[in-house]
Every structure is written in structure tokens, then in C-alpha cells.
Length: 247
Ligand SMILES: C[S@@+](CC[C@H](N)C(=O)[O-])C[C@H]1O[C@@H](n2cnc3c(N)ncnc32)[C@H](O)[C@@H]1O
Image 1 (cartoon, rainbow, N blue to C red):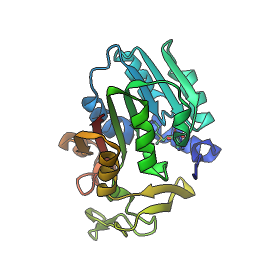
Image 2 (cartoon, rainbow, N blue to C red; image 1 turned 120 degrees about the horizontal axis):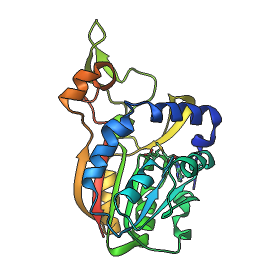
Image 3 (cartoon, rainbow, N blue to C red; image 1 turned 90 degrees about the horizontal axis):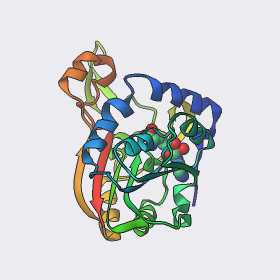
Image 4 (cartoon, rainbow, N blue to C red; image 1 turned 30 degrees about the horizontal axis):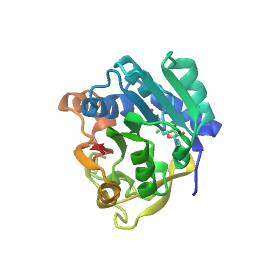
């Protein structure tokens, strides 16, 4: 199974770090508030965070009362940052690809993932591996790029604009063609997998998951007004999709 590790490319890592540390990044302004509301009570729970990156979420879950958090990621550079900046006694960071999750010999009450599943080639297989790692009443809560935002070829402008450059509506490219997309984002050949919403849902359901909640990203009018250049596209297309599932 193809695994990619663009986050260990120094140029990409440096650029991503800059984006992630910007105070109005999409993670902190959009993603984190939504996924946080969807989480069950973490007190006393064993949590696995897949694609933990720089460890911000792992630290957050430990602070929310999780008894232990295991953060796994393929990227050495992301894990080194996590260990240095987001460590705690009950957090373990481990280098492991989500294609190899079956190597974990443990079970978790809550499995989370933030914006990492864009990189998995076989989403159905990933769901099955996660299902096997959950306790019987366990929950999976995750976010990933919304299929509307990955229906993009990196060449056309994402938005049709007015003459003055205002975003009028969002454009889609080949929504119904699933698979690998290579686009220009930070590096010239950034790779992610585009899938339809129905594929995500059907892969979860056929694994045995019960989908309890689905959310699509949005920002408040207040934030749109505060940062018009940055968040004015959000009302045209959701960047991220979120699911909470139970076993
Ligand atoms: C957009 S970052 C998100 C990081 C973190 N979850 C956050 O919210 O800030 C995506 C993460 O997925 C990781 N990743 C990509 N492919 C992976 C794979 N095959 N196995 C495990 N992690 C992977 C990357 O290394 C990166 O840390």
C-alpha cells in the first residue's frame, strides 16, 4: 500500500509549521472547535490520535482528562516537534503509519484523527483497522478534507470571481472521479486522495460503524468579518468534514 511522508520533506515541514503556528490557521480557528464539541467525555479514557502531527490535539486530550494518549504519525519531524512541545507523562508519541495500525497491541476507548485521512489510499481498510482497535463501546471521532474541497485539480482557481476579485462561487473538478490527486500546495506535487461523501459513509457503515454525527466546517460571521481575505471562501464550500461513529 502506498504510503507518503511529505511532512518529512524539510521545505514542506518548515512551510507547514509556519501555517500551523499562524494565529489564524484553519486548524485552530475552524477544525479544533468543531472536533472538540463532537468528542465524548474523555475523563479516564484511553485515546489514540492517528496522524497526531505536532501533538497539539494529543496534549489537548490529555488536558481534557484522558488517562493516556497514544499519538501516532509517520513523520519523524512532526513527532520530534510533538515530543519537544506537547509532551506529558501520560502521552506517548510513536512513529507508525496508519497503514500499519494492526501492529498496535492494545485497545482504545476513543480514537481520533485530525486532517490526516486525506493521505490514505484505502479508506475502507483504515476503517477496519480502527474498528479492531476500539473497545466494544468505543468511539471514533475524526476530521478530514471535505470531498468538495478535494474535487480540485490545483490548476483552475477554486473560485469564480467578480471583476473586483470577490469570490462568487466555488468550482468543482471531477467530483465523481475518485483517487490520487496531485496538486500544488506548498510543494509542486502534494498528494492526497479524493473520495466522494458516499464512499466515506459506505466504508464506515460496511465496517460496522454507527454514524452518530456529521459536521461540515463553517466559521461564524464574526470571524468572516474579522478576517475577510482568509475566510471568505468558507461560505461557498466546506473545507473539512467531521464524523463521530460508535462501534
Ligand atoms: C495536516 S497534518 C495534521 C496533524 C495534526 N493531526 C493536526 O491536527 O495538527 C497531517 C498529518 O498526517 C500525517 N500522516 C500522513 N500520512 C500518514 C500515514 N501514512 N501514517 C500516519 N500519519 C500520516 C502527517 O505526517 C501529518 O503529521
